[in-house]
Length: 102
Image (cartoon, rainbow, N blue to C red):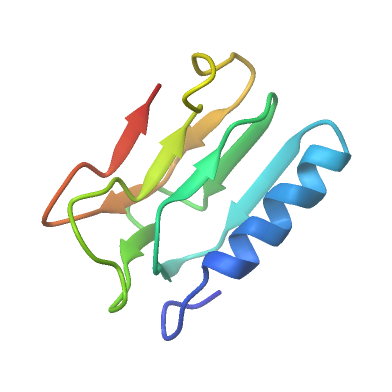
């Protein structure tokens, strides 16, 4: 995950592992990680955490289209649940919301 290519598959794989483990941290080191579509987190106790908010970021990749959010917390079936979230991380989207919490 270093921002040169689409990092969405790696994010989803890490999220799915944390779902099976019933929670945990998805750590993003310094640098920009690009995604081609919205990264959805709809499970309890998952924290997406960067090194610092100035050093770690998730950005819209070249294939990302429209004004969708980069990160979606929750889903259409219910509100975002406690115990997880985003920490020390920058979300950069020039044409729409960076984060949407349902």
